Image 1 (cartoon, rainbow, N blue to C red):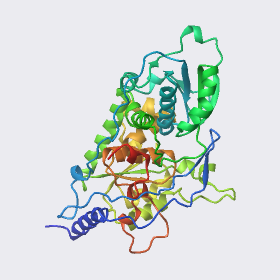
Image 2: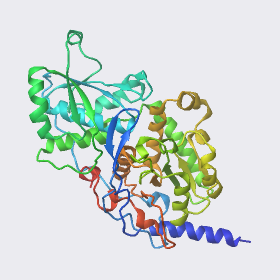
Image 3: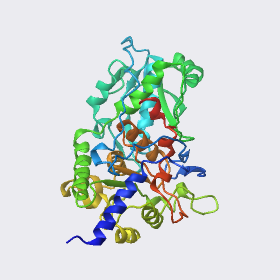
Image 4: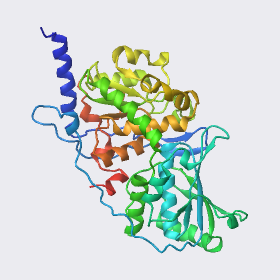
Length: 420
């Protein structure tokens, strides 16, 4: 005999995904003022989710099966044509702050190196922990990186010995570098000193399209951002195992996985605080996320992944309402926890979060910033446009479709200039 409660729960789950087929009605995170990365001194503006596109229409049965909730999309760019292999000099940099920033740093460096006809030296990676450094190949797939840039820019493992005694010209470069900045600021310096060290500055975080008249640089930026940087196979495998575990767990409910970027460690830091000490809009705590998910119609048996590493008592109320809620510690293979969790390496844990949040059926960013922006970009490139942005003070009639990211609804993300 069928339990009436199961029927009601199933109906609510189906209804939620029907709602995702409607148009967005509101913008969110728009009032978030400038945030700062406390540990690095890098300042950035929180993402204004200002975009507008429809999510995939629901089918006649009232809900899309998991394998059909993907938009048809393909790259609009072609790989930049090969250039003369002769190098005019060298461009170096360090990847900093975290994996979500590495994507932008690599894209800017590749664009600059191609414009100058320079050779790109594989960057080292500097972690947020003091003195933490690793080689590029310790985290990323170096062979795939080189293959993807073959003919775009020349890449070498290290600076030639005869150049190591020279002093590079250090240039502060604004993220999403423009052709004008390269032409007016970088190129004159490069002509005098053909050995540059770039420091990519995130004075603002904007992933809105920046159309130019230089199609070669536009294609280079798209190619570098979406084809260049991949985790090394051993790390990708861990992310795949975790995603597979979540998918398996979700079969007990509706077969879908909801990923929430929830960072309770940031709620009391400058990134989420105003000058007066109040919490900024755009930073949501577990109780607010819980209220949001319930109001927009997620059923209690929804499978939820939180980007928290360990469980703590602050998450208990969320678990009580949604028992199938998991952290990295809950779903990571036991033999991998020493390297990824017990080491305290934030770069590795955020890299896993980036992969899982980019692949989940639905993504909810509870913190505005670069992570949210690059997850959105990856999801757009994969056709996974179900991104719901939280809000507080919801009325009884709130619908999930009212909170679809405006990166999607207004197509205001840079990815939309790369995919069509």
